[in-house]
Amino acid sequence: MSKRGAFIAIEGLDRSGKSTQASALIKRLEAANVPCKHIKFPDRTTPIGKMIDSYLQSKTELDDHVIHLLFSANRWELASSIVKALEEGTTVVCDRYAFSGIAFSAAKVLPRETTSKDGDSTIPIPTHVLSYEWCRAPEISLPAPDLTFLLEVSPEKAESRGGYGEERYENKEVQEHVRQVFDRIGEEIESSGVGKWVVLDADLDKDEVEQSVWDEVKPFIEHMGVSGPVRKLWDKTREAAMVDALYI
Ligand code: DGP
Image (cartoon, rainbow, N blue to C red; front, side):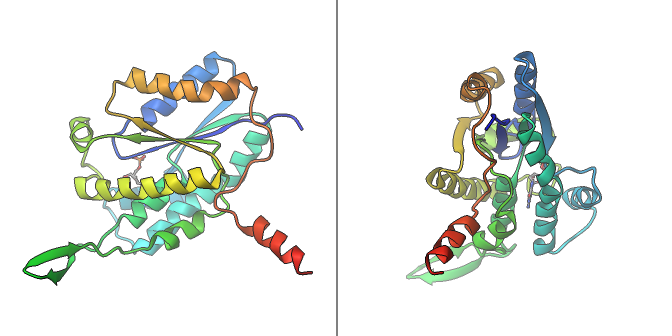
């Protein structure tokens, strides 16, 4: 079977420099004559994307479940075209993906935190609106990236970068919860063996981050792409079918 393109996702907290790094990676791939395609989620141009855009700018309010499913639907809108591009030998660089979907939704806590008495002290208990498992469910079976970068930025650095705080989610508390969920996702992806998860320090100078990204991507270029079919995220259907087959 001939090689296919690599699926590379760039994830991170707000103002971590994802978009800059995605563009820089595309430039390097083009310079190396690698067929490549740059996509970004949310894709705010589709009808679903326009609803998401309006929500992010706080022009509309939506139930937390509804907006989560819209973000996911926005990825499913493009899922088959991603697989097609990869199978045709195009490397796809994706600025945000399903992992942001889970992290930003599962990080949501109720505005008023519940408190419980522990002796004399009061411990704040963050009450999550949506469970991790519920948030992950609609992302199951989406095309799985071969390589995911998580750009970690400190709150101080993020705030010092332009435009921070203009949209929903861009505050320290939410970003800290998001960081914790990203860590959990990274552990799951690494242990599932479905793709590589690379954490990079995005407080560093952008050229240093760009070089670290390229060092990870280079082996894919040297091997002229990826062998084997595009895998699926958290896909248990094949395993379940194999177990069922044992009992037939
Ligand atoms: P960006 O255009 O990359 O700055 O993303 C806009 C904001 O939307 C950012 O705060 C992260 C958030 N976001 C991105 N994807 C998702 C998603 O799938 N679900 C949720 N809840 N938030 C997301």
